[in-house]
Length: 137
Image (cartoon, rainbow, N blue to C red; front, top):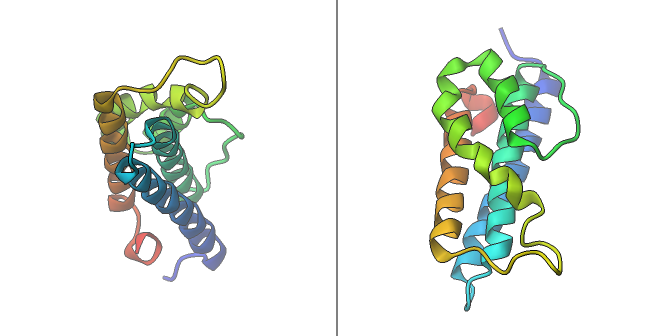
């Protein structure tokens, strides 16, 4: 039985946004010098949008939030096997605002930025693996 076209389109849209944020994070990493503050922000956004894609596919509402623990818990209610990924992603929540505004602490360390990017990739890959091919491409 074919899937609901509207749900497929909405889920794909969230995944496309997550892909774009991942590309932006990867681009930030290659800048000279690297834009580590932006990289961590886009890593957080990748994970957030991936979780929202997963929830959208399962027709679970979510509020406007950057809180990856909240979104991750909603995902865990659907698939407890995501626990290790959600646990790793929670730390990315702070990058929705940290390093983004004047007066905030400097820049993330190279190791912090690399870890954020690795987690973002892991979250997106884990979510994609749990969605039908017609959605996850």
